[in-house]
Image 1 (spheres, rainbow, N blue to C red):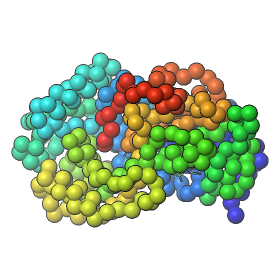
Image 2 (cartoon, rainbow, N blue to C red):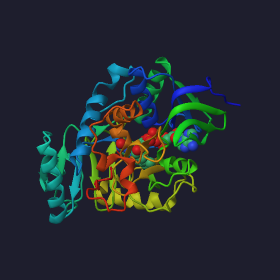
Image 3 (cartoon, rainbow, N blue to C red):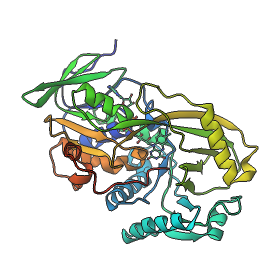
Length: 388
Ligand SMILES: Cc1cc2nc3c(=O)[nH]c(=O)nc-3n(C[C@H](O)[C@H](O)[C@H](O)COP(=O)(O)OP(=O)(O)OC[C@H]3O[C@@H](n4cnc5c(N)ncnc54)[C@H](O)[C@@H]3O)c2cc1C
């Protein structure tokens, strides 16, 4: 049976996805005392090993743009810092507009992104056709593009951070399920697991799509909802596509990897919650293939090699949940990252580590704090540009 090396840690992180591991990295670098990461599955078994690798800075709010921008800088230096090549390729992100109203909406995002100092561009129909070779005539009236956005391979990133934290003395244990908190006088004193009860003053909920399940195991109601998203990869094609392409109307997104495969998905609704597991559906294959071939007809003969799915951890306002839960001292949230946890992880987890260390962060609490869901008011700001 799996065991935990010590009986007491300063911090226990639940979830060894990119969020849990990167949080452990910042803590270890800050000399934050003994840290344990527990995961009931295997490395890359959650969304961190199932995503499209998209990294973009085009968002509807300044708060997200700034976290994404800092993360892009982190991924640019990742190879030097961690000794693993994440194959971060800055081929840009291209949002397609199918009509004038969509182009207007994208133009608003573009204006905000530019006001943050990032050289986003508005593309004409002809400029879109130059960047998306073979696009069907009339498929887009224009679009927006930011050249420093891009894609990476999630696996070397997860492995790189995993190896780094272990060499910094963090214990990472797989096959251990976190069952709930031990709380005394409203303060965390331990975490119950299938291996043992571990004494600690701080538990971080970095359980991704299962974060709502874990909070509820701890007796805390949260609004996080797990939604299943499907994705596929085709056979490798001769390189023809630089940017990640996103179509907001149906959530279609796809990019071409450095190996030549097309990797992408489209919105196909599924029942919410984690109880269904992570299967693939024939319906997704049909909807995705039709969407892709409708956009670029010459892709019709291309064969699909693999399809899989994973959970987004969605919040009502589209912002992540970062910080201490006001109901239990020492219980810190690092979840609710929806479909963009990978691209925000390096920057967002720096703030998680600050929260663990009880340092002030520069995050707006009205957007990120778990306390925002404890007041009965509709969110005043929302981050809705969720896909791709
Ligand atoms: C199809 C798809 C495409 C996506 N595309 C992108 C993209 O292009 N760009 C991007 O930035 N993001 C994308 N995302 C989102 C991104 O993958 C996630 O936001 C991110 O990986 C979340 O990381 P995490 O560490 O929070 O969660 P995860 O990687 O899911 O890790 C959570 C871990 O917690 C463990 N766990 C859960 N409960 C417990 C428990 N009780 N005890 C112990 N362990 C537990 C799980 O086993 C799991 O390993 C996509 C997601 C999906 C599903």
